[in-house]
Amino acid sequence: MRMTPFLSLLARDIRLATRAGGSVALALAFFAAMATLVPLGVGNDLKLLARAAAGVLWVAAVLAALLSLNRLFQADFEDGSLDLIALSPLSLESVAAAKILGHWLTTGLPLTLLSPLLGLMFGLPPEAIAVLTVSLLIGTPAVSALGAIGAGLTLTIRRGGLILPLLVLPLLAPAVIFGAGAVRGVLDGLSNGALLFLAAFALAATVLSPFAAAAAVRLNLAG
Image (cartoon, rainbow, N blue to C red; front, side, top):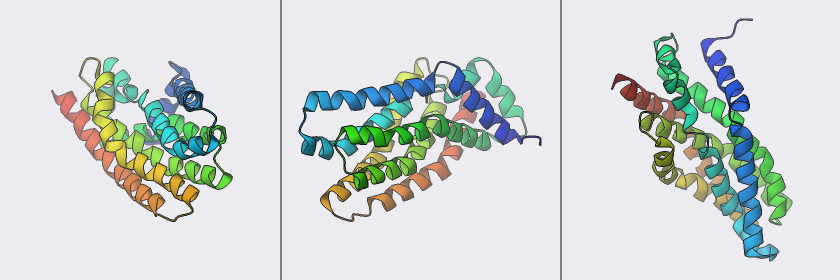
């Protein structure tokens, strides 16, 4: 069966992400390295590690995901593919959505699947590990979505990869707060509704970001 343009672009981005530059392996290695270094610095106090685990792992996941976001549109822009894609029947909003989904499948989802193992290193109980995994599963799409806006805005800027985190990290603060808060709620035996707030934030980000990212790319291509 012939693939639709959206699925063709998605498959192409996944193929490039898994082959070129090892961005998936780099993100996972960074996530694991950062999570491993914190216990070495904090010490072997399991209670302290468990309290810090949610925040540390969420920040590590966000930073790891940001490593490859600057290439979301940049590679296609540099080789001229983005101009051809913009002229295709596929709208730029759909292009942005495909790239966001591809980035999450190759970065956010693997980071989420690795998180239970790292949670064990921090001494998190099973119920807290489950909530951590669910929070990352819900929240990491927002990282890819909001990151796409930053990637679109910095498309034509030299060394835009250095500026992109400064633009995106403040926008991702609610995801880190709610994601870490959900795990701390489990540790404290409280139901604080953080997962619901995280889900609402992630839904708004993933729905609106393709339009904002497409507008940023369109503006840069026109300029």
